Amino acid sequence: MVLPTVAIVGRPNVGKSTIFNRIAGERLSIVEDTPGITRDRIYATSNWLTRDFALIDTGGIEMTDVPFMTQIRAQAEIAMNEADVIVFVVDGETGMTDADQDVAQLLYRSNKPVILAVNKTDNPERRLDIFDFYSLGLGDPYPISAVHGIGTGDLLDAIIAAFPENAETKENPDLIKFSFIGRPNVGKSSLINAMLGEERVIASPIAGTTRDAVDTRFVDNDGQEFLMIDTAGIRKSGKVYETTEKYSVLRAMRAIDRSDIVCLVVNAEEGIHDYDKHIAGFAHDAGKGILLVVNKWDTLEKDDKTMKKWEEDMRHQFQFLDYSPIVYVSALTKQRLVQIPEKIKAIHKAQNNRIGSSVLNEVLMDAIATNPTPSDKGKRLRIYYGTQVSIKPPTFVVFVNEVELMHFSYVRFLENQIRKAFVFEGTPIKILVRRRK
Image 1 (tube, rainbow, N blue to C red):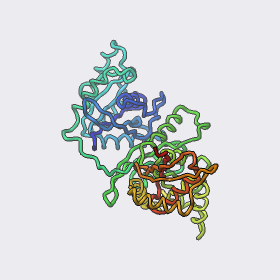
Image 2 (image 1 turned 120 degrees about the vertical axis):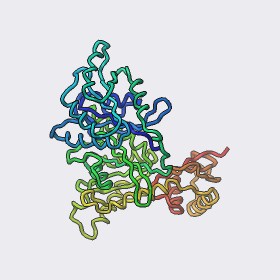
Image 3 (image 1 turned 90 degrees about the vertical axis):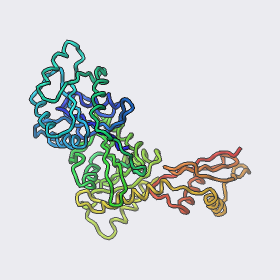
Image 4 (image 1 turned 45 degrees about the vertical axis):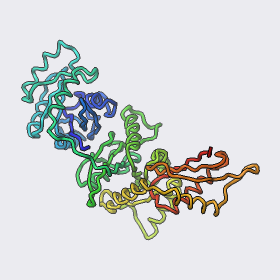
């Protein structure tokens, strides 16, 4: 379903992310008493009174030219354009400020339903102060405490009532979900902006700019719908000092879990790092389709052997990803960017590939004839038959006489034979060994 969308906006440090987490029912948005922590828009889905809706948290709107603030304001304005309903959050403790009035001026021009939420009104004696906010001209203010959940039910009732009629439409069942993963500052956000042709995600040469995972939908020229998830750069655990960075790592792992396919982005200027392999391992172990993306390819001095040398190095460094295709791109010049969605579609098709049991068993029998099964202490492994039991990733069960006789090297041999016979580019495949009863 394409759900009605709610955007939470307001000046910095009024509790927007706390309200977002309260409504979403989990800690998705980073909460810290530091203005500007939420830089990009954060997306989640929630429900109230049987109504599902999408929720967007935004960076605080501040009318200054402080680093990031101009872009944060632009991100908030994009979120307001996407939203069906806007929740404007103000601080009941500090009272109304000039910044609140500046934000209200933006909201007047949005022509969207606006619900005014006065946060931090835990003390009933302070609730009289909310009447000052009537002067903003945005209707009745709703006193709430996001930390304790006070008043959030009334706020949600107002949100649901403001939804446009027939706001829900069917979502494309063929939607492909993918994410960019990699160390900080390899160009993930720049790739997204280049692919979309708009400043959808804040891109900056400062490592660690993207702290939050962001969902973006787009449709290619063939009508294929994608959901693209940008993630915070994953850092080594030993270098994750700030609480903020710790939550970013957890969120990146969760974005991998939500994705069908992950694009591992490597910086061509810096080369392959050991931790790139650890990051790829996260996605491989999760059974996700994987595309290797070498970004900033335009920055290298190249000859006719450069790409071949890079591929040899990539295959050597990522031996467990020998099934993954590699693309060499530039977010700056948009070189070969068209290959990314094309490869993703091919990987998605491979992930959903189903092999008939009769055809699969012919391949297994041919494999055994080529390389007989191993034996131990006079007892030989016998493979009776195999069958595919699931997709994404393609998973096969092979029934044998004794599981202990199936050495991991022979499992790998069978996997290679299956890959030779069928198209499984870009996706891991799993072979489960079971004893036939």
